Length: 168
Image (cartoon, rainbow, N blue to C red; front, side):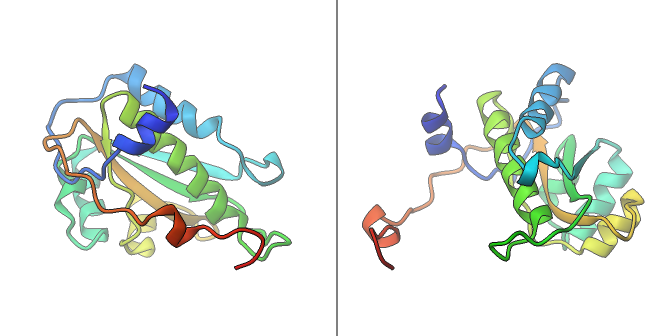
């Protein structure tokens, strides 16, 4: 599978089988994050792999009861370890973790694993569950596992609706 095929065929998976993820595949997903770019190559991130069923249940509660979090065999939480505002006005922790999450999600898809980027969660509850320090930002997380569904593609806008040249 090439990168464009992965981009075109990846879907947000919300139903997972209980099949465990092989360590080799998990490590490849994490390696994709490690290889992703970051502002000034600072790599100010931390990825927490959660496989404990009790903690997954607590993460599900922190994600407002989204069942996929509790049924997946694993979740990965992306945290920004230092916050700095770039000259463009964007925070490095959010941008860097978003890039790393994108790399992980594409690698997971190539390996036959499903993901669903979660932004609807209560960071304070995630921090409490995983004992994340107060000065660390919880940016996003995803369940990770073998899909128990094959979601249909969602509609996408045409390029002409989202691209302009030389001016807005």
